[in-house]
Image (cartoon, rainbow, N blue to C red; front, side, top):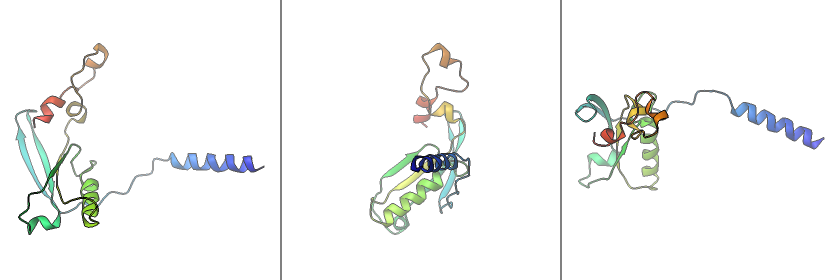
Length: 134
């Protein structure tokens, strides 16, 4: 009898964890946003820059974290910036600057040159070398 209850519980947990419920969006933190014209990839890119609060009053140099998927809409910049802010506030990591590079063609920018005949036929791949020089 216990195994039936356990099986039903396991089934319920499995089904409920497979839903496509939307995750809550992170609040967009205060940040600077600008565009650059990249000669390497031949397009304009949106750049988002988050700095910790003490950056404005400090003369210290800070390390910089660069991130792909650094756009605001449907990308991870807000989540990473808010996570860094919490970790810095809790003194779990040192202050740092976050620079997010928004994607235009993610598959192209984050994949290397394709050597297999089968993968060479995939659309828009193999641009990571140029992206790293952005």
